Figure 1 (cartoon, rainbow, N blue to C red):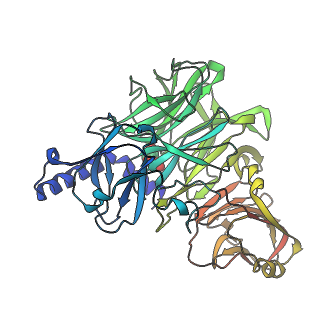
Figure 2 (figure 1 turned 90 degrees about the vertical axis):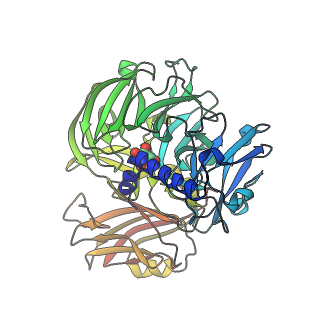
Figure 3 (figure 1 turned 30 degrees about the horizontal axis):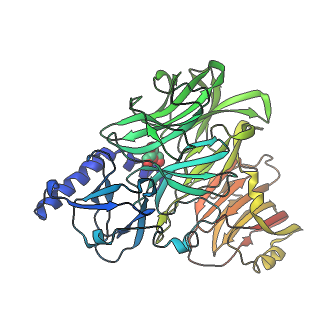
Length: 545
Ligand code: FRU
C-alpha cells in the first residue's frame, strides 16, 4: 500500500464511516438488535491498562468508549471471537477511581476477555519482537502513520503521531505520543488526543506559545490539528504540563477545510503562519492568537502534509531561502514575505521510497532543521505496524545545478555506534570476506566507491540487493541520479539498516531513499559490482530499547 493509495482512503473517511454505519445497521438487523440494545460493560478503573483482544478476521464493530464524550464518538475495533491475534490496550491510568463505560454494537466472546491490568499481554517481549525496529520509533501497539506536532518543548523532543491504538491497520485516528531528550531514545506516553464529536484526530503540528498570544498560558504547548468528521476542520488544543494532558479549545473549530495544518512563529511580523493542504494546493494563513486565521495566499502542486521553513544556504545565515514541500517530499525553493511564498525554483525531489508526510521540528536547538518521516513499511504478523524513519537534518547547499535540499541522518547516530570495521583502497573480495563474518542486524555504513571494471554497484543484505547503482542508467534503486562530476563515477553512500528498513543517503543526502526489508533470510551484508572501495566504514549499532 503506498502512502498515496492509503491517503486516498483517508480523504474519503466520511464515505468510509457511512459504509461502516450501513454495515453495522445491517448487522444489528440480522441480530435483531437496535443501537438501543447495545451491549454495555462498566469498569471501575483501578489499573493502568484496559486490555482488548483483537482478531483480524472479525469485522470492525462500533465501540463507544464513554468518558464524558458524546455517543456519536466511537472507535471501530475487531474484537476477537476466537483466539486473539494480538492484544491492544487503552491506557486508563488517568481515570483511576472513575467508571469507564463501553458500549458494543455486536456480541462477541472477546468482550468478556476485556480486562484491566497494570501490564498488557505481550509486554514482557515488548521491543524484543522479531520484526521490531531497534533504533527507529514504532508504537507499542497498533498502527502509525504521519508524525504530528514535532516540537522541542521544555527540554524534550515531542513526537506525536497518527495512531490507531486498536488495530494494525489505519483507522480511529488518535494522536499517539512519545518523547525523547536526544532524538534517539523514545518513551511512549499515553495517547494525547482522542476523537471527539468533530471527528477523528488527523494530522497537524504544535507550537510553544511563548508570548501567551492565545491566552492559554505562557509557554502553553498548543496543538493545531485537523478533526475529520462530517467535514474536515482545523482545531486547537493546549497543554500546560509538557504535553502530558491536553484540553481542547471550547471555540473549536478555528478554521475550515481542508487538512494537515503546519504552524510556526514568523518573527519579522510577530505572528503565526499556518500552511495547510487544500484540494491540491497549499494555503497560507496567518493569525495573532492561534484562534482567528486570515487567508493570505496559495501555492499549487502539493498534496497533503505541507512543510514550510527557512534555511541558510551553505551554512551562511546572511543567505537564506524558504523551502516548501508536500507529503511526497517534492519541494520548491523561494522567498516569503510573510503572506506569499514566491517559488524561484523546483519542484525538485530529494527522496524516494517509503518516506511520506515528513514533518520538521519547531524550535529545535541551534536552529537545526530536523525532520522525521513516516516510514510506510508493513510489519506483517506483528502487534504493531509501520514506523518512523530515523531523524534527518535538512540543509540547503549549492550544487552545479543550483541550490538543492540535502538530507542526512542526525549526527547523534554516532552515540549508537558499537563495533567499527574499516576498509580503504581495496576491491570487494576482501571486504566481502570480512563482511561474511559479521553477525549484526543493525548497521550504519559510509561507503565511498568508484566504478572500476564495471557499471554497477550492489549492496546485498539478507540475500537481496537493497542499495544498487546502475551506471548505465545513472540511477540508485531506479531513481535517476547524476554525481557532481560526470567524468568521475564516484559516489558516497551512507546507509542505516534496522530490522525492517534501510535508509540510504547518496552523496551526502542529495538523494534519500527509504525501503522496507524482508525478514525472511538472515544472510548478512555483501558487495557486488566492478568497483573500487575507496573507503568503507561500517558500525554495528546498539538498540535504543
Ligand atoms: C497523510 C494523511 C493526512 C491525514 C492523515 C490521516 O498520510 O492522509 O492527510 O491528516 O494522513 O491519518
